[in-house]
Image (cartoon, rainbow, N blue to C red; front, side, top):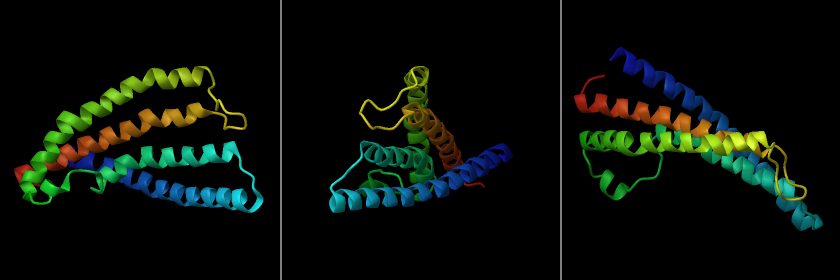
Length: 169
């Protein structure tokens, strides 16, 4: 039990810090979009690179914050049923969902993205659009990284659920 509690503490701390850092990306995204809108409507100009930067930042927020969102239990689920469950039933559902859905899915995405990311690095992938951003491979590298963080948090959720089912801490 000591190992499980230590694992949960370390993984939660990592994803908590990443979640806080990701929140700053949200502020940056607001600034970039505001600037883009201001320049577009006031001066009638726009930049492909700036628009790509917007979706790159959004993609990073979405990918990297997934594990934090799971940690703080703010992820999407069918709450119509879940909210009516007892804490023990919720723990069972979280354990089963983590072990049979979340963890295998994370492993599949990590393994499937390996070739996708390595090819992007090998060809030094950039935007196909004129004026687009360089180094698209960096953004693609965050796919397996973020799913690895989600995998770690999914394992922590399974451990937390197991502890709750057993009724011990």
